[in-house]
Image 1 (spheres, rainbow, N blue to C red):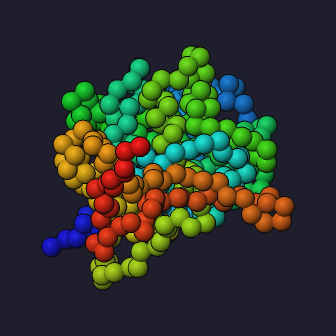
Image 2 (tube, rainbow, N blue to C red; image 1 turned 30 degrees about the vertical axis):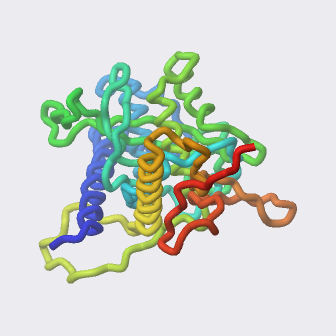
Amino acid sequence: MVSKDVELGRATAVVAELVVGELTAADRVLHKAGLGHLPDYAINGGVVLSGIPQDVLNLYEVRQSATLAALWRLWARGKNVAAMHPDMAAELTTYRLGTLPGELFRNLGRIPNIMVVFAEPPAMEVSVGGTGPGRLLAILFCGRTDPDKLLCLTSDQRMDEVALTVICEPLAEDGTPLPPPPGGTTPVLEYCHLSIPARAGDRFTAEDLALRLARKAGRTEPTAAEQALATRALQVAVYLCSSKADIVQPVPRGKAAKPGKQRRWNKPDTFLRLGWRLGPRLKAARVRVQEMRRSAAQSTGGGGAAGGWRQYTHLRSGHLKTVWYGPGKTLSDSRLIEPYWVSEDLLDEDGHAPEGIIRPLR
């Protein structure tokens, strides 16, 4: 019987293949229109898109296709894919973010232009003529220089910003996949582009990124969907910046495919597992705490600490923290502070917290 990890691995490969297929399709569209040189200009500079003939593609289509094709060409230099475990993805959404330093995100150069693919794509509101249901498939990281806004690797010393491309699949109102467009075989994906400052001295929050999205759309305040999207993308980015992030490369297993039986998809050179050890452990700890809270509530009749009783030990929630180190504390790293017990010494041998203590009335 196939294990849960194998099922998640296969599901991740399907999602990654869909995303990479859409990026390569943008490159093919440009080649077919005689514009195959444009993605290189988005990387190296030298052309103004407004001067491109628009007899085949309009300016928006040219710009979108050139950006996606350039992102694909840079990603293809390393083909780094990280499969995010669903438990880890769920836990990261509960972790708080404060004000972040821009130089922290230079740590993304450890694995250049990584693509984080969600093994079980979570629900995510997307903007389809407004907002609508969808699911988050992947987040693609890339570097960008300033002021020319050229794309580069996240390991490039010239990088001034991190360009995030959040890739979502729009769904129907009932949550089912939308049919492919006429003549197509795969669903149309939606791309949201975010910029994270990566210069020394830059300081920003998730709310700042959401506000940028709103201003690009001509609004003064972000929507709830934009706020959720910016926060989710930033939580993943901050965790990737940690030198202690749970990232491992799986050991190859099984026999090699027979000649002529290989998958048509060109498998990434580096297929990593992100949060496959830590995610399930954090989820188990959270479930355990929830059960203990329900037990404590039942013992007090659901009314809290009645009659002088109160819950004494408790679990503090986790958060993502920026840590400074090195000479003059000029280098930065991120740490995932896991949930931890307050007054842990009061736990019994089975690891259970007491239901409460009796305090004398004064």
